[in-house]
Structures are given as C-alpha cells and as structure tokens.
Image (cartoon, rainbow, N blue to C red; front, side, top):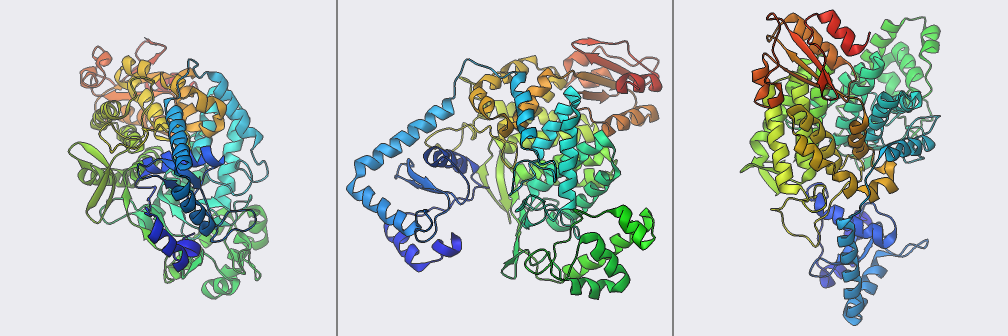
Length: 627
C-alpha cells in the first residue's frame, strides 16, 4: 500500500484534503494497534497488516480493513473508491456513521469486560494439544499450511505438555519442526539468524526480514529442546544464533536492534541469495562442489534464478560417503566455506537495520541469552544479557516507570503490560542463570509495579496499558498469543513462578482470577493461547521447590547447580544461598532452613512438605533426577 497508494499523488490529494492521516508504529504503540485490530476483526471477520481504520474525531471507529489496492479489483474494494464513498457517507449520512461508530465502540467495551462464571480446566490444555497435532505437518514440521511462522511458544507449550503427560508425539512435533526450520531457507545458513516466516510449507523461501523477538524466542525453544534431547546440533545452532545477534543486531552500547530489513538494492532477499557461479568462484572447485551438494545450489536456482542455501533433503551420510570424509572434516570444510561466503556477503549493500531499542523485545533477548548461557555454561552469553539489562535500567526506566522505546537518546511512551511482563522474564532468567538474589529482588519490584499499574481489580487480568496512560476509547486486555506471547500470558507464567519462589500465596490466589477472566477467549480457541496455557499447565503439573544452601564456590554446590541448569525442569524452582537467613529476606518461609555440618545441604519440597535434608551429592542427584 505504501507504493501503490500512500506515495501516489491522486490518493495523497484525497487524503490531504478530506482526512487527517495518522500513521501508527505498532511496535511503539501496540495499545492502539491492538484496540483497532479488534475492531477490524469484528467488522470484517479477519485482521492483519496493513491495518486501515477510519475513526470519528473522538477516536470511535466506523470502517476498517486490511489491504486495499488503489482501485477495486478481483472483488476487493479499491482505496480511492473506499475514500470517496466514506467521505460521501460522512457528510450526507452522518447519523449512520455515528451509529456504526457507537456500535463498534460498545462491542469493544463488551469484549474488554469479558466476564464469566466459568473457569479454565485441564480440558483446554488437552484441547490445545489435539488442535496443534491435527494441524501438524508430518512431512516438514510446523503447523498449518503456507505461509508458516515459527510460533516458538507453541513448541515450548508442547515441551511442557510432554513433560507433564509423557506424550511422545508432542516432543516429536517439536523436534520435527525445529529440525525443519533449521534445515530450511528460513534459517540463514551463511550468517545465522531466523527470518520472520516461510512463504512455503517446506520452510524453504522466507520473507527475509529478521526480527529480534523471533530469534530470542527461538534461542529459547532450541535451548529447551536441547535440555530434553541433549542433541548437540541444537547447542551448535544456539551458539551460532548468539554470534549472529552479537555481530548484526547488537549496538555498541550493549542494547539490541529491533529488526533487519528484507530488502537491499530495492529487491527482497538480494543480500542473501547466490548464483552457482558466485559460489564456485569464491570457494574454488573442490570446496565449491561440496558446498553446492550440501546446500542444494544449482544453475537454475530455487528463488528467482538464484539460490537460497538449505539442507532440507540433504543426506549427510551420503555426502560423507560420496566425498570420503568423516564428520569432523565435513564440519570443518563447511565452516570454512560459510566463513568465506559471509566475508563476501558483507561486501554487498546491506539491508537497513531498524535501530530502535524496544524494551519488551530486548527483555526477551536478555532472557534467551541468560537461559542459553546457563544451560551451555557460556559466560559470554550471560555477559551480553547483563550488559543489555544495564542499558535498559539506565535508559528505559524514567522516574521508576518502564518506557517502551529508545532511539538516539530519545525515549518515548509509558511501558505496556508486555514491557513489564518480558522485563520480569528477563530478571527471572538472570536469577536462574547466576543465582544472584539481587535479580530476584528486582523481579519482585517489577511484579509489584505490574499489579499496581495494570491489574483489573473487578474481573482479573492485566490491562494492556497502565492506569497512568493516555485514555483511549476502551482499556483493553490482550491474551491472544500471536507472533509473540501476549503480556497476560507471560505475566501469568512468570508471576506464578515468582509467587512460589518468594511464598506469595496471596498473589497466586489473585492470579487464578485470570482463568475465569479469559475463559471465553482461551476455551474457544486453545491453540491460539498456548503461552497462556503454559501458566495453567504449571498449576496442574507436579512441581518441586529445591533449596540448596552452602558456601559460594563450594565445588559440590556448583556441580549440582550446573546439573540442574542443564536439565529440562520447567515446573521446579531452585532457591540457593549460603544460609536460610539470606534467602529469608526474599522468601520468609526459608528462615529456618540450615546447613548440616557446614556442608552444602539440599532440601527437596513437594506439595507443601519437604523430605529429609541431604548433604551427599550423589544422593541428591539420585533423588532430583530419579536415576
């Protein structure tokens, strides 16, 4: 629409003479986007972007749609026709326009209220699983048909479902999907990083834009998949993703950019594709031939006459046999080839970078880096996470209020629930990576602010915007998990976990209101709320509190903590300090826990009762991991 309509003089003349045109950056103002997206869905039965909404001077919407061609075609109304007809109706049938606007606003208010006596149960969790499996692509992985999106929160839901039920198909769907994406063109095999989505069912041809949040959530998903399967290729992929983030998406101040554009030289994907001739020229005959065989590089190409490297149908056993090489030699040669081609690619005109720093997206990346750093014992990843958090705390907290975005010293917009929820996730992950109680203290402060600014005292759930925010026509709540988990979903998961850690049963009782507040949305479309359902699932799953007391640096204590970090234990909590008194400043229930004979001591508690404390490391491992 930008090229067809907004840059067109005829369209511009109509807009400038008769309308006040307002362009909303949905990344900076997700509250406005969410509210009017709901309107579009109510009016047309579907949503999406570009989103065009026509409103009265008091913000009330009376017409909405997504894409409009310049002129009517193929049964789709044209933008010029829509503008002229709306203009005519506004002046000559104003009562009808006002009636439409009032009706749409009332429907929004009814949706925002969403009150019900019912509450969510296990049934919605199982229903989400069966819905996902019914749309699972057994051939290539992923859910549904093209275009295919990564949807990492669906995968993290399935991993928790597997942990809870032992349902092997849930884990199979996860590994099949992760492998499909890692092999496909949606993954950049030369420089690493995942793009936004695949235009086909094979994960081959991507929309080439790279988003910070996608890569954060995928680092998380691959890390958790490694914890379950211990597949070394997942560890390698995560390490490559972290290096890509450091090289291409990290500012010199430690913060992270939002996105890398799809286009360069006026063409989508131009930066990323190759001819076979280019590959052979830069790699030489031997290495070039091997690379082309592995990554399916051909003369005719697979994308507009050029090649997107991929390994979708590559048999590495056949490659090793054909070239008489072993695993290590093959890996070394391909690594060398990728390095050469990356150096060549960096000489090309690069896609533009969206260099604004978004709090919620940065917080997601901080959390992902902290988790990956702890699971793979990579201090560099944890250092990157801490540096980015320091940036957020310095620049995006103003008068104790979290803000939305930073760019070149300019900070704008009061933070939304997603900013606070993802910030809470980041603090929790930093605690779990370092076991430094200061991060848990900061998490508690964010949680208190969330309840104060966003909680709906009448019905439950968190409002999108704070009580101190600019008033819109309705104060919305968002629970649907789109490309990212919603603020309510993340808040539920992290607050339930934090509440158990610090013994806030009152918070848990309060949070349980969310299961009735969002009953209608979630129960009618469970697989659209898989991040939210992870919070519900955690309420049903068996869970333990593991309290480890002992001197800092004690080898037994460090060995046990590292073993715990490496395992997938999504429902267990770990609290550790030198003494119970030290823990008690955050978790009062821990004040009577003590070390035995000055040795590292482990308490394993489940269902409000604790087993006998353990000082023998092997015995502790045996009980914790049931080996």
